[in-house]
Length: 155
Image 1: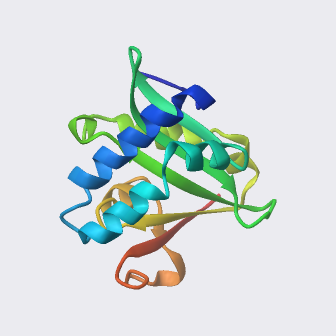
Image 2: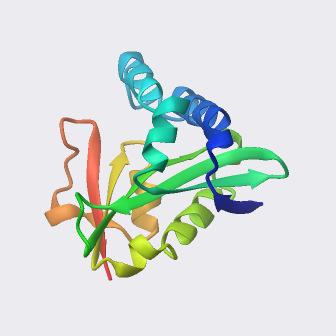
């Protein structure tokens, strides 16, 4: 497995990875309408737009994209950053791919300059991020609107 920077030509395949992951892995925690809304907001065009504002990476096995993740400044802050769009194909989950994506993001300049890193964690992935050292923001263990946890890590 290799992790490399996202390229514009990766957008369609990356969008498909996200869509499959949402439909398979997240469907037990979310309504179909919410899943489809998130798929639409992670289309190839939206990923290309996002790549202009954040550092994005893809995890590949040979020539196949199997996961993705990104990091950006948090609302323009130089001392805070945010992890975004972290997805791993269902058949590659629990095989270290997500861990490698997080480790790559934690070597990125946005991470290294930040004192605090936030991640909006899905109901599906919150336990994974907690194992990676992220904790509930302000100690709030309840998901916002019942949909997402706010986690953070301090450096």
